Length: 428
Image 1: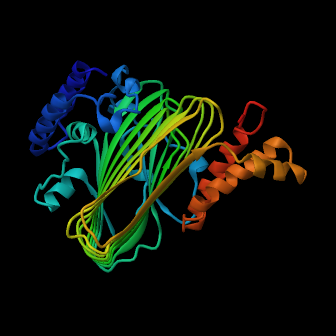
Image 2: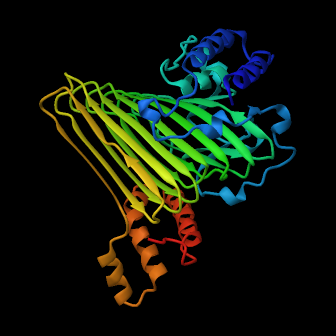
Image 3: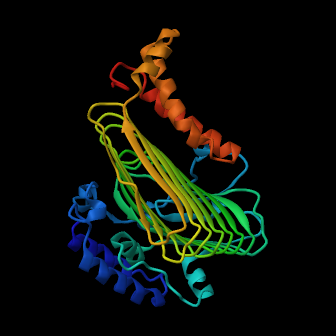
C-alpha cells in the first residue's frame, strides 16, 4: 500500500459511525505522524534486513462487517485442553464463541479508555504503532484485579480467512494488578489468500504480578504479521514470553520491555521455523531503569530453502541500574545453502556493577555428530531431523502449561515431517 492507499482506507475508518468521537482526534494525530514517517525502508538501521514490499506493494482494505463469519466456525483443529478462548475472526470479536474465567474483566477498547480517563499510550517514533493507533479496529483489554490467580490460561484466537486482501489492526491491553498471575496465549492462524495484521499490545504488571505470555504465529503463507509489544514491569514482577513461529510470509516481532521496579524479572524466548521465502524478524529491547533486575533473551531459528531471518536484540542498562543481571543468546541453524540469517546482539551499559553477557552462533548441522548418528543405523534424513529436534527442545520445554506445550510440539513435529521427507529437504 502506498500512502494514498492508506489515506483512502483511513477516510473510511473515520467515517465509521460505531466508534466514539473521542477517538477520532487520537487517530488523526497518529495518522499524520505516520504520514511524516512513511513505511520503514532498508535505509533505516533497524529495518535494513527486512523487505516490506509485501506491504508497500499490496492493496489491502479494511475488514468490513461482511468479512465476519456467515455461520458457526469450526475451531476444533486449534483445540487445546483446559483453557478459555476469545475468538477474533478477520478482526471481528465472536462473543458467542468466546469465554473468560472468573476474576477477569474483558473490556472493549473504549471501555478501557474510559476506565483510564482516556489516557492514551501510543509510541510516537514507531511507524507501525502509529499505524495501529490510526486504524485500531479490534480494541480489547484484559484486566485482572490484585491478588487474583487465574488458573486457566486465556487464549486469543485470531483467525484470518477469505480471498480478499484484508488489513486488521488489533490493539489490546493486559493490566495485571498487584500479586495477580495468569497465562495468556496469542494464537494466530488462518488460510487467507492475502492478509496484513498489525497489532499493538500494551502490558502492565503490578508489584509481584506474574504473566506467562505465549505467542503462536502459524498464519497462512501469504500473511504479513506485524506485532508490537510494550511491557512495563513494577517491583518484583515476572514476565515470561515465548514465541513459536512457523507461518506467514513476513513476521516481525517488536518487543520493548521497561523494567521500572527493583526485583523485576523478564525472560524472552523464541523458536522460529522458516522455509521457502519466509522472513521472520525479531527486534527486542529490554531497558533496565532501576537496580536489581534480571533479564534474558534466548532465541533460536531454523532456516530452510531461501528463507531468511533477523535477530536484533538489545539490552540497555541505565546509569542507576546497578546489580543488573542480563544475558542474550541467539543460535541459528541453516539447513540449506541459500538460507540467510542476520544476528546482532547488543549491550548498552551505563552502570559499572552489572553482570551482562551476550552471544550468537549461526551454522549448519555438525557433520561429526551427523556421522555418529548415521553410524548407529539412522538414515540421513532421520539423523538430521533428530539433530534439529535436539536444537529446539530446550525452548519447547520452557512452555509450562502441558496442553499448550503439546500443541506447539505437534506443530513442530508436523513442520519437521514436512521438511524431512525428501532428499531436497535439510539439504546441507
